[in-house]
Length: 198
Image (cartoon, one colour):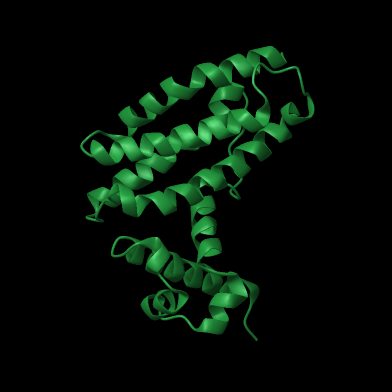
């Protein structure tokens, strides 16, 4: 009988193989042209194994995005950080991941190839940021914020994707500088919304 630790390690390995396969295929062809069969062949994973973990390639992609955002990883104590810093904490680690991938020779997306992946990222970000705002009770306080929570998360998510698209045109810029531009776009609005909640 397989013990729990071995089982968990096997699951993590399978997930890593599938995410790696999808990531490499996305750099080779348009996302919409990729089929599950190709992912399985690249990952050397069986069909039944894939479907025991994921509904389809979209769920695989979105789960990978959630992993990169650290959604399900316990965060260090938020004591001493502002609500704005907590809400935008995802951006620099995500951008640094892209920077490391580029440094290891992974090809960059062009804008048309990036579009469907960025659309999934936008949707996942809206969900994650919406959950974070609700956790702080903001979504339950209509009329108390300068900006409704649902509109605020759409603004932040869309601005992040816009920043990523712009970075494709300026790939020599470091992640930290790009993160500064992103925060300059959204932090004032997030801060204003937070101030109205105090």
